[in-house]
Image (cartoon, rainbow over all chains, first blue to last red; front, side):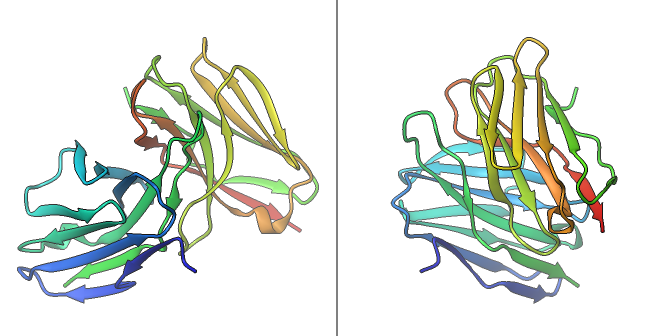
Length: 114
Length: 112
């Protein structure tokens, strides 16, 4: 069973289109995240949700809108895609258990905007 | 000042040697520190976590933390070609938060 699963794995689309990436975790974690990894491999946080509530919203264009229907799911919708949105998007989840709360990452979604 | 800084490398070591990876962070309120390994085209995987000053050992890996100097390091003993990857240092965003801020990673190459 995949702990954190993202779909799709690859996404190629044209500029101006709208697309969504889905993420689901079966670990029972209470916090989920979206990260963007650019071509230079820099992993940058975009959003964090705790029990369906938005906790962190970094400086991200408002074309990006996360949605968490329940604590096991965190989707990312992107409007009016631009070339600069091309990157790998990782979903992750974590749980505070004592002091340990390392992330479990999904396998990533490689988005290519042409 | 960047929040989490690492040398990008590449760091090249021969098989069997000790690889030393370093990281500094800017937020003195950070309490939790992690090392992730990322192979090309794969997602990051957690290899070490450390919360207290000093050393923490797990197999061939040793994490070292010095909060006064805002410094975290990872030592890999008996380096293997399979250790060749990018190593990401991560620090929690603030005292109460669980969000992690990542460094840009150090690429390690172990030659056989």
